[in-house]
Image (cartoon, rainbow, N blue to C red):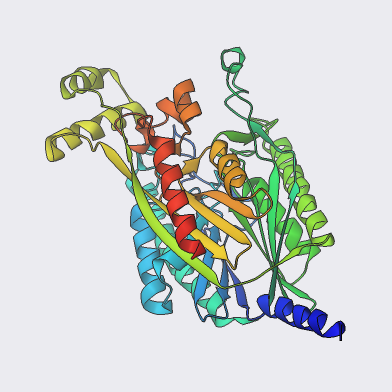
Length: 447
């Protein structure tokens, strides 16, 4: 008689993790001509070679409630509002994926082509360079549609599991910028979260993340930086699988040390960092992982981040004749906003997404170049061992400082705002606004 309750328990437990269908796909977005390279300001860099292909990758998940959710990762520096709208509208119209069930993450790769209007103040193109950028952008749009459709078309019964490991590649870059930065905190997040998708004994997909800029490389080659090397390494270790890299909250972290001006040595270092990250993932897969149950309850909303007052119009006009390059383009942009809008906008829209897997796992997708404090804060609030926090989703709107980073100042807190076209740093309510909205969405997704 004692065996009956145990049997019932096992049946209930197994049914909690049943019902998944999953499909994974990848689309090659390697350019076929020389294109402007993204991520670094200054003189336009035109690509000269391909170190390895770069990719869009998609994981489609259909739960036992019948809802389909899609995660797309990209070896790109970021997306813009315009790009998000095109991709999301196509996903809804062609594949019936609602916006809250589509997460678009980029690795923030600095060795990829420029697309559309991403970081548009960085660059000053010749007509030929702009045409190459536009041709590449058109191909990327088509590939997003292709990869989402292919992942959904390949849906088949699957099992999901989660666990996390550790890697030691990231260093807090604010603290590493010389003696004047030594007072800054050295916070990093070395967790390597991993989701596996299996069909029987076959490993269909590996989703893994890390909180660190993809800036080990800065030459003239097309590649995926350390994240690209890690994906290559994992797909070689697990033939037939698709490895998707999710950039977490790496806004204030760099892979260090780095080598500048020596492409061969820098590439070897980036490859090594990729192998370190891949080994962390392999060790997770080799160990015990916790099954993930469904359904996925998806919630999405936005808050507004207020900006401090900008530079007055008269001062902008006085200073702009003495500027050149990107600073000049920034100030001319603000002058145009005064002339067309009355003043530069005083706030930034900030979307946030939450996916709740069953009752035991929370995936929080933040927007922009989110600093590490948000990852540490939300994992502490919602569970260190069952919460995944990622940045670099949706629009690459700006650096997103915590209150600590904002008060410290520096690039990620203050001076990096102009290059994103924002008039000034955020108000001190920035962290509070994001925290409140995340709390609201976590509660909504838990219902």
